[in-house]
Amino acid sequence: MWGRDSLWSALERDFAAARSSGCADSAATLAALGDFARDVARLGTPNVATLDSLSDRFIRIAPRVAPCAALVPRYVVTQAIWRDVAKRATVGWDPQDRAQRDALYRTLYGGRAAVEEVMLQQPSTTTVLSRAASVPSATPSAVVQGVTVHSGDILVSRGGYPTSALIARGNDYPGNFSHIALVHVDAETQAVSVVEAHIELGVAITTAEGYLADKKLRVMLLRPRADLPLLQANPQLPHIAATTMLTRARAEHIPYDFSMDYADPERLFCSEVASQAYRTQGMTLWMGTSTISRPGLRQWLGSFGVRHFETQEPSDLEYDPQLAVVAEWRDPVALFEDHVDNAVTDAMLEGADGGDRLRFTWYQLPVARVLKAWSWLREQTGGVGPIPEGMSPSAALRNRRYNARHDALSADVLNRAKAWQAERGYPPPYWALLALAREAVAR
Image: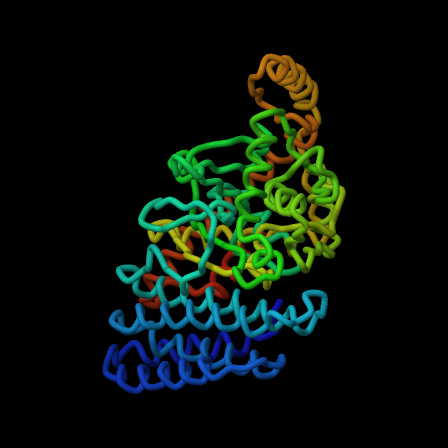
């Protein structure tokens, strides 16, 4: 999609050559990182070419860092600083301008991709928690897992299920995240509540511990910038927004919005929990809406019930200039599997564009209809049935088939990746995983 296959091949060749020397060239690599950091610190208001030039430099340093475990923490910290500076420097950019949006995507997504390729070559150095620059807030706060969260903060995460990968990748700007949740902190007790929309339940409330206990491969914490005019006029705006959504979620059942209509407040998908809460206070999140234009992807999502293809995707919230990254956590054990899931999903979506369709066995439909009726009865008494509210029996069967196919392909790619590593001596980078996934889909 980037049209940079020659660059990826060059990076891999550079890394293969650098592996033999290990940390022998660490002084020169540290100097290159220092030069990069100084140029980032001097960045004013960049144009597209300037941002792309710096992003390219950062990515090209990765093969020199990856052979030396001692250099990895410095590279990770540099990326966090670069991300923060780039977001601040591009606040005045137009989120609807394609060239500017592409450049910011290459910077933020590309920086994370480079860091994770380095981590996967040095698993013992994987940074579980990466903190960004301090982001002030006047709203009530509490400490969760060593990180101070404020009321109105937004949690962006990636689940460990095949459909989570589909949500993260199913976008004109494929990303790393599939779910949004809104944080509320009680001003008196400092109790933390997390409001989120689940496919099975609709909008639900849980504790911080309950949120983290659900299967997640990565989590990023976002916070509205304190220098926004709306927050300068009312520093408690994020807390009021979170309180509004928490109060509504306690007072009524809010069904899940499978159509992904972010303009309809009656039903909410996960992104809408945050966007609708802030909309009540006059603040519009996702200043650049997400677009889903690939015909195969639209057909697949349509078969799951999606009707709106200009919407609010979880991954795209990172690019909103109104929000700053506070911290990012990743599961080091599952990081490689996360990349495999992405590669399999990307390859499957290429197949969708080539005419693959999500099908199900026709004779299963009567059984699914019975299960749907049973689910409806369970919902009337506050329970949860096997087919979620708002999902059709045929969509449930397609979902089941998709999950099974994705799991089988992922297992195949994992096995072939082990053989690839045994032959070359290092884990396959993403472009190699994608090639393996394409082969698996073709088989």
